[in-house]
Image 1 (cartoon, rainbow, N blue to C red):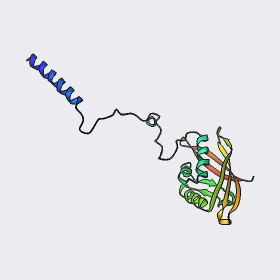
Image 2 (image 1 turned 90 degrees about the horizontal axis):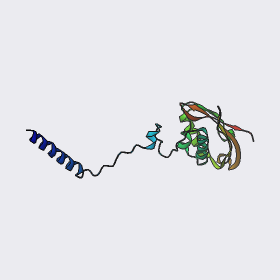
Image 3 (image 1 turned 90 degrees about the vertical axis):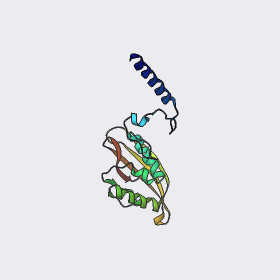
Image 4 (image 1 turned 60 degrees about the vertical axis):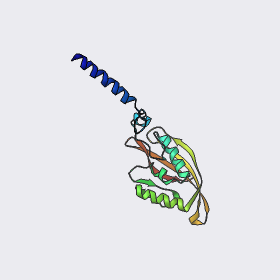
Amino acid sequence: MKRYGLFAVMSALVVGTACAQAPSPVGPTLPRRVPDVARRATPAPRAGVAVRSGPRDVLVAFGKAWEAENLSGLLGLFGEARVPVDLGSAARGGQYGPAQLYFQFKRLFERTATSRFALRRLRAVGDSPHAIFDWQYLDEKRGGVQRRVRLIVSLRQDAGAWKVEEIKSVSR
């Protein structure tokens, strides 16, 4: 009986080894690799959106999105709270929620043509990070008049992420 038991164990090992080495009908399987994003325990970025962590990254992303007139990139930098926006004579000022911001910026970019949106000053440390941008645009609604506005973009922390808190224009 012991001999039969040993034979059964050896046969099972041989058959098991042969099955393990046989090609899979589906194809070879690759070892699973855990993506770096999952290891860092941060949410995966949306397609086309750069990963932002600090206030400097958010302010630089704001400048790039504005200059490219990229609505989705710009709106991704705002939270769910209403935000005060004052763009000088370019648009009506007020406090806007996410849906209102979409239409406000869409109309703004339809009636203006940004010729320059340059970062003038950046303060990314402390309790109130902000940036000052020089914005030059053609106001197509008013006959293509060239205008210049200086915008201050302030940030706040919202659930651990930096979000735009306010946009206001100042005289130059």
